[in-house]
Image (tube, rainbow, N blue to C red; front, side, top):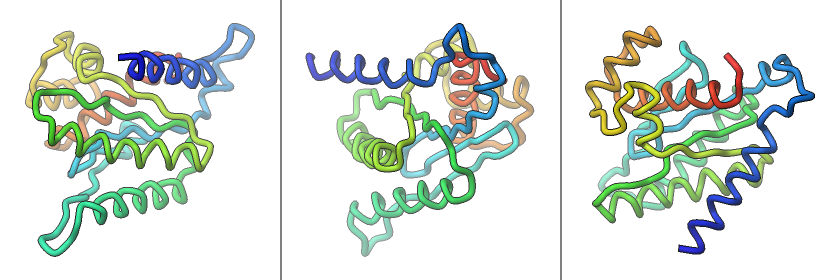
Length: 179
């Protein structure tokens, strides 16, 4: 339990580094570039309401789990070359299925290590926070998240990973007082 508390405190310290101070103008943060990730075998990503997609990280039958991790690191490198982002967002793992939590935790470890190495800030949100922000229901299902993204964000796709990444991006923009 202490590890969780320490982890939360570390995250708050990093978040405070990027939150605007009263003396800072809103204009200073409007240039903040954010990459939002819904990390899984099919990872949803978003950089704006019009720039989003998915990465297929699934392993082939002749590959080890390590290939998925290498592929994920490569995608982060590729995105960073396209747009030098300042902040990475991701959803904290939760649920009842320990194998999926372990799997997601490995990918998150890669993301955090990548961020530390490249001096990019990172922040996580719980699934409940994201769903409540998007739909006012902390237990909203995938179809409702997609529907809300279509209605409120003009999302044109049908992928829950993309929709979640878009909602996380909007949540961070609200938290940081940027549009």
